[in-house]
Length: 273
Image (tube, rainbow, N blue to C red):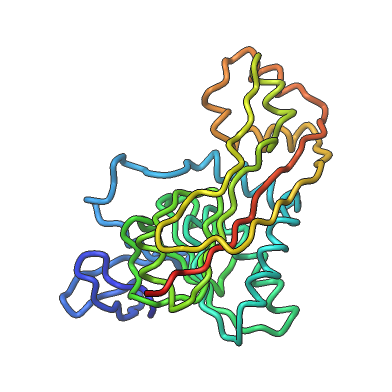
């Protein structure tokens, strides 16, 4: 088992109902197969991370392929990274759409992968584990990754918090980090419906200590959404909780919209020395 004990850092041994380290720290395995490696001290709220409604909406939306151009580009870059098998960490995996898509792409190409996914939301990780039985998923903190030094070859960090110190620690020498962030005009038409003065996203690459930015790959295209999918998209964004009830009700009546998808896929390489 690649996972480490989040309390003492020792290697976990797999048991029928979970994992245990040599010091006797035990961690439960859920029915869907994921491990809960988030100690009580790592929680700032009772149920940290995205809630059930956000996960349900995101799963419904993404399974229809609206973000597949981003997922497929990330898969092409990752599968060109070296000889298999590759160990991939989906850091902030959410409901698991991107790692599931990577696995499917690798199977078609005959590549061997080990996919590990982690998120602080137990609802997200439960959905991910159900969607990709071949994956190894855990609830945990990106700021205290339950993995050993140099444990993985590639990290994906899509629309999730960055922790470059931990990413650099668990990446192998010369390992790669792929980060996805919203471009300037991402979901612009949705913002126009929700705000009097819509604002652009920064659309810039964050500086990540310990990493060199090798390449920036923009991914921009229009999405023709049904009314149902507009509502799912709205529910999976932070805008849902910041919008006044009247505008929320207006959007719920939309019959369909064309909305811009605008992403930046940022390719970093771990610095050595």
